[in-house]
Length: 138
Image (cartoon, rainbow, N blue to C red; front, side, top):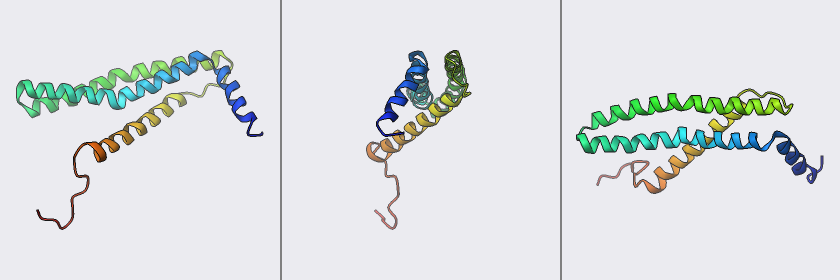
């Protein structure tokens, strides 16, 4: 297959998949980012509010821990439902059922994006020294 026909083949494949299936994958990507980034950031903010109100770090950490776990447990069925809808869209168009591959791929990619974002923030913007200076006594 020549290089000029490859993009056209991919475009036909994408069109055969359907706009609704592509939209579902986009929502899965956004939902996965919410899982890895949105929920933890929201609970960090909530924990800071709890610590300000109660002046108790233990209470804030406990609330964040429970809140993150409960939020993730409640969010995962949403992502699973989106994955099932995507599978239904594929099979309705006569395409093979790939299982939960689309959800797995979006989860891995969004986890990678979240990890790269965290590392970039930590190294470039947090103001923390990532590695202690060996031998410096200051």
